[in-house]
Image (cartoon, rainbow, N blue to C red; front, side, top):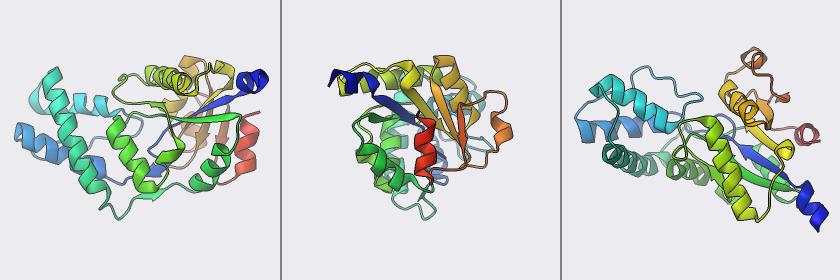
Length: 233
């Protein structure tokens, strides 16, 4: 039993572009929430959300639209309104989709005693779990690090590890902790935290996007379960 506990691997999955795509739901919900609170419409403009945390997106929009960062109370009010609207629109999103191979892979991994599944995402927890629920995959993830834990992705990973260790009741070796993500920001954070990494080319990224950060492994997508398992050896 002790040997099994020591050998267990922790897998920290990003959400957007790695597990699923919500196709603009965040933009719709945030624009409506921002207009309701600050009276400014179309706040999103040409913002690129790839690899960004929800908190960092709030910061950028606030600086651009009202010339300052939000107070703690304003931030909390905007987040609550945003997540309320997100819950409304996520179930109406006709272009929502899971990424290829996600359910078969999660089914396989969740059945293994030597693997613990968790999240490491820039999403606020409420919005992130709504996405997972819409895709029918929330039940696979009992722990994680989220956008409210930090604006810095490395610290989100560390929060995910700490929460996973609390839920699992055991420690996870850094050499057996894997970050699975679709952007170079996920991989850079994994490197900074001393963790292993698997990049997936599922959201418009190519191998060249990862040339600087050098993930341990690169997969086309999550459809090849043997190939994914080989990355964990």
